Figure 1 (tube, helix red, strand yellow):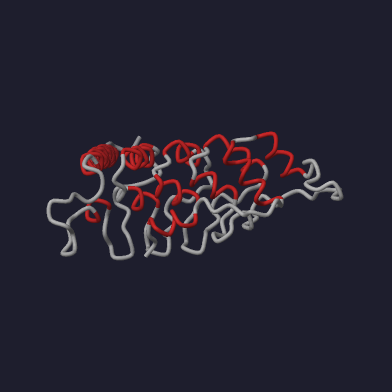
Figure 2: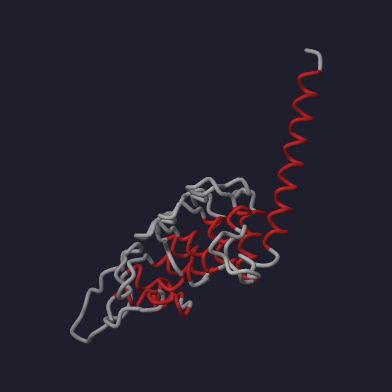
Length: 228
């Protein structure tokens, strides 16, 4: 099971060695576009006086952090650096790269409630929104269990995109609404997820049902019409 403790313990442990991958993540953290471009194109100034011919940093390198192997694109999504994602994609970043827990950048943004990053990620047609992580959860199923306003915004962003569905299920066949139901291990009186999450999911379900009903009605009218 992936836990919040894992992410807190590893998310911001950038490498201490001044080498390309770590410098790239530092530039992302500061949204320093000029430095990012220099590192990715091999035009950055030499790190040490005796160093020359600085090699470009591989856009999908995973050596920038001490304990967590993630790509710069993944890091930008996780830290909600929405403005950086397009730049990294333009340099060939793999938008569907997975970490050892099966998380993609979309999972990371959904887990953190990074709605701005999610909006950008959803604009990329190649992003896979139905991929399941090691726990069998899609990005939507991850986000719906969050308790903050940011998680609520992330769920709205995913559902309003039309690319995520309230019908998505985890490895045990549970939907978002079912994941929010109390379990035997739940603390009495403590709501699972954000208090407004059920209402957002109910609205999405109602929209889905209306769309289905309209499509079925249109299909029936089509079948009833005489051949011309």
